[in-house]
Length: 133
Length: 374
Image (cartoon, rainbow over all chains, first blue to last red):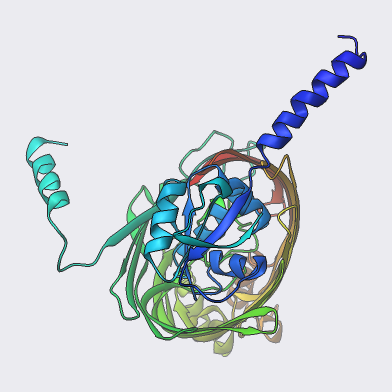
């Protein structure tokens, strides 16, 4: 394959599509009645069981990878290892895992002390956005 | 599953659990195989034919939140080397007195080492198992009570624990009793750093198969030599200091674990290790290397007994010296390994360890494992 200008521009196009598709924004959401504010570090503390002020919810959807990477500074298996360590030593239970964005929205909107994250496009009026990634 | 059981299970599953609390099941497993590289040097219990039993085990944990601060945890582990006979490694009630203060009653892991708490949860660390040259205690759980405190100090998370209990166990065909076990553990987490130190005391009694020697010495004018060989109510003092840095890219660990059982043939241990690892491909692969040493120096007052006075006494001295020599060793080891996270809940691991047997013969062992949490 010869790398002329045309090949390069096609490659750049393909790469930028990939880059764009993985850039879907993730919104960290709480119940609409929540009045405080929490930054990224505080949210990480909650998801790592160090701060028990809110009940965190994981989810299986596509937003999880980005959330775990950007907020918890881990990848999926490191997050799993972290909780395996705690769960098998009496140090706590991992956040409950919900199926998708819609389940997170309904759980968070129905529980005053819940915190979750969803694809920013799934956010509606029933929850409050703390910040987006 | 036969039909009546299936029917009962279905009935149970559809019944509302109004009285009993939810029981949460989870578990972990290591399926490991290994083989020594040398035909007559046994390393980590592996010989030169491929073995699947030695390092393999399954564990199942049941946890129930009984609400208002009370919870129950039971963990059962079945090891290949015990012919898969299940044993309770944890069985305790935990009560959260207030946020940050928990009391645990029952059977629980005694955290002698940096990795004690999750010693078997291979998925949570890089090795197939922590190096047995350093983590060499023949018991890992006690029956007793512990108090566990968690609090923050600025940006650091502090964990303080105090244990009291008792444990009986068998090792190498001999029975041992540990009484008045007292342990204190302090660990501090600061960012990616963990600093840990622990102290472990217990009263140790047991038989090492040296009774004939002990009896023989009691018949001589030098009974104190027999006392050194007789393990009864002897005080054990163990100390540990460990440090870990793990920024999810690089891993670094150092741990030093000196311990001694005063004035006995068991003697003074001084084990240490240093381990480093680097992750690649977004954490999917990790390569790591470890070096360390297991050292032991038995205590004896044999040098206070004159040699050459009496042939019977000389024979006794020689036999005792033989037993002592077997416990006088320095075993350096190193290992290199790979972890590959091929699945969201499982990892494949490969490891090569070079070490020595107690007689000083050098050899290696190659191990492969699949580890999982579920």
